[in-house]
Image (tube, rainbow, N blue to C red):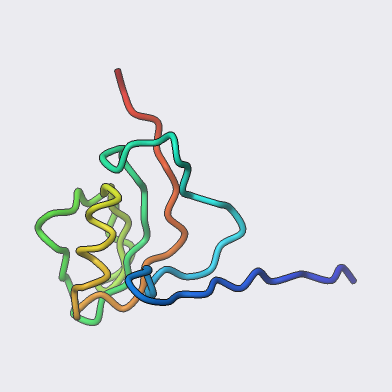
Amino acid sequence: MMKKHLRLIKCSGDKLKKIEPNTGDWTRQSESPQDPIAITVKVNEDGYVPNFVNLRAQISPKLFTATVTETDLYRLEADPRVISLGTPRRLHATI
Protein backbone atom coordinates (compact mmCIF):
# COMPACT_ATOMS: atom_id res chain seq x y z
CA MET A 1 0.00 0.00 0.00
CA MET A 2 1.34 3.40 -0.99
CA LYS A 3 1.45 6.16 1.62
CA LYS A 4 0.04 9.53 0.63
CA HIS A 5 1.46 12.80 1.88
CA LEU A 6 -0.88 15.72 2.39
CA ARG A 7 0.27 19.29 1.91
CA LEU A 8 -1.39 21.69 4.33
CA ILE A 9 -2.27 25.17 3.20
CA LYS A 10 -2.10 27.84 5.87
CA CYS A 11 -4.55 30.69 5.42
CA SER A 12 -4.26 33.93 7.30
CA GLY A 13 -5.20 37.55 6.85
CA ASP A 14 -6.69 38.23 3.43
CA LYS A 15 -5.75 34.84 1.99
CA LEU A 16 -8.35 32.68 0.29
CA LYS A 17 -9.86 30.31 2.85
CA LYS A 18 -12.52 28.50 0.83
CA ILE A 19 -10.09 26.88 -1.59
CA GLU A 20 -9.72 23.18 -0.95
CA PRO A 21 -6.15 21.84 -0.72
CA ASN A 22 -4.52 20.68 -3.95
CA THR A 23 -1.22 19.18 -4.98
CA GLY A 24 -0.31 21.75 -7.63
CA ASP A 25 0.70 25.36 -7.32
CA TRP A 26 -1.89 27.30 -9.33
CA THR A 27 -0.36 30.73 -8.91
CA ARG A 28 2.61 31.91 -10.92
CA GLN A 29 4.17 35.35 -10.64
CA SER A 30 4.46 35.81 -14.41
CA GLU A 31 0.74 35.32 -15.06
CA SER A 32 -1.79 38.13 -15.21
CA PRO A 33 -4.60 38.38 -12.63
CA GLN A 34 -6.95 38.60 -15.63
CA ASP A 35 -5.89 35.24 -17.13
CA PRO A 36 -8.73 32.71 -17.10
CA ILE A 37 -8.91 30.15 -14.30
CA ALA A 38 -11.09 27.03 -14.21
CA ILE A 39 -12.63 26.41 -10.81
CA THR A 40 -15.16 24.11 -9.17
CA VAL A 41 -17.60 25.97 -6.93
CA LYS A 42 -19.83 24.54 -4.20
CA VAL A 43 -22.72 26.74 -3.04
CA ASN A 44 -25.38 26.44 -0.32
CA GLU A 45 -28.37 27.37 -2.53
CA ASP A 46 -29.75 25.22 -5.36
CA GLY A 47 -29.12 26.76 -8.78
CA TYR A 48 -27.12 29.73 -7.47
CA VAL A 49 -24.37 30.89 -9.85
CA PRO A 50 -22.81 34.33 -9.19
CA ASN A 51 -23.46 36.66 -12.13
CA PHE A 52 -19.77 37.53 -12.61
CA VAL A 53 -18.59 33.97 -13.37
CA ASN A 54 -18.77 32.17 -16.72
CA LEU A 55 -20.55 28.88 -16.10
CA ARG A 56 -18.78 25.91 -17.69
CA ALA A 57 -20.89 22.99 -16.42
CA GLN A 58 -23.61 22.48 -13.82
CA ILE A 59 -22.61 19.28 -11.99
CA SER A 60 -25.47 19.29 -9.49
CA PRO A 61 -27.87 21.95 -8.13
CA LYS A 62 -25.18 23.10 -5.66
CA LEU A 63 -21.98 22.31 -7.60
CA PHE A 64 -20.66 23.74 -10.86
CA THR A 65 -17.50 24.54 -12.76
CA ALA A 66 -16.78 28.04 -14.00
CA THR A 67 -14.19 30.21 -15.69
CA VAL A 68 -13.10 33.16 -13.55
CA THR A 69 -10.19 35.53 -13.07
CA GLU A 70 -7.96 35.81 -10.02
CA THR A 71 -9.95 38.90 -8.98
CA ASP A 72 -13.15 36.84 -9.15
CA LEU A 73 -11.65 34.33 -6.70
CA TYR A 74 -11.67 37.04 -4.03
CA ARG A 75 -15.27 37.94 -4.92
CA LEU A 76 -16.23 34.26 -4.56
CA GLU A 77 -14.37 34.12 -1.25
CA ALA A 78 -16.47 37.02 0.06
CA ASP A 79 -19.78 35.54 -1.17
CA PRO A 80 -21.66 34.02 1.81
CA ARG A 81 -23.50 31.57 -0.50
CA VAL A 82 -20.19 30.03 -1.66
CA ILE A 83 -19.13 27.11 0.54
CA SER A 84 -15.86 26.14 -1.16
CA LEU A 85 -13.68 26.50 -4.24
CA GLY A 86 -11.94 23.41 -5.51
CA THR A 87 -8.58 23.11 -7.21
CA PRO A 88 -8.24 26.24 -9.36
CA ARG A 89 -6.14 25.77 -12.51
CA ARG A 90 -4.94 28.28 -15.06
CA LEU A 91 -6.35 27.97 -18.55
CA HIS A 92 -4.38 28.85 -21.65
CA ALA A 93 -5.44 32.26 -22.89
CA THR A 94 -6.37 32.43 -26.56
CA ILE A 95 -4.49 34.90 -28.71
